Amino acid sequence: MNILVIGNEVNRVEIAEKFGTQHTYNFAESLAESTSIQEAEVIFDFISATAPDTLKVYEQIPASVFLDTTLTSLSEVIAEADLKKLIFGFCGLPTFVNRDLLEVCINSEGHEGALDEVCRMLNTKYSLIKDQVGFITPRIICMIINEAYFTVEEETATREDIDLAMKLGTNYPFGPYEWAGKIGLKNVVNVLDTVHRVSGDVRYQVCPLLRTESSD
Image 1 (cartoon, one colour):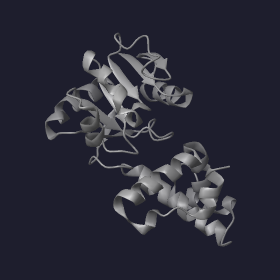
Image 2 (tube, rainbow, N blue to C red):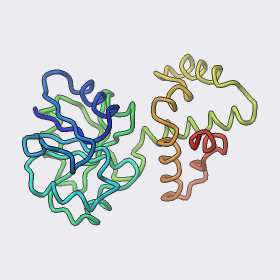
Image 3 (cartoon, helix red, strand yellow):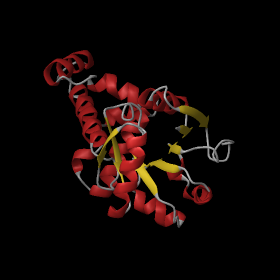
């Protein structure tokens, strides 16, 4: 399939690693800069959910569109942009794309058949998640990272000890600090702040040390 990635270089690399060499890839840093959108069969858009006024262009193309809605809900984006086209939401944070299961959401139960068909063509398994900010895995991992920062702030353990303990004790692929570096501290804080704002749950309040380091 012809896959168009709209985002940054990290996004492009992870999508290519996820879906493999049996597909062809094009890349653009924004919808406005894309010169191959009409040829695309599938689009993974990592950035346009924050600019819904740009999304109307998708009404004019036949490609299946996956929009990174980690920090917003798919239904809100579709309503704000007044879109009629079928669009899927997905978790596009770094390290959460190239996994066995692609975390996705839909705006209507009637769209699951179309989602299943395009995922079958991409040869990927998926996990259908409720349309909510943060999806599931990012919420959990970002909370763990936050707790790791509280632990260091309280001088209970070192960063190295925490990373080692989590990898050996839980068989996680990365320790919390190692994972935070791969996701990006600003992304971690954005997930926590957004989920906290929507849910009101104090568990998502950002550790002061994490917030400080994310702004450096």
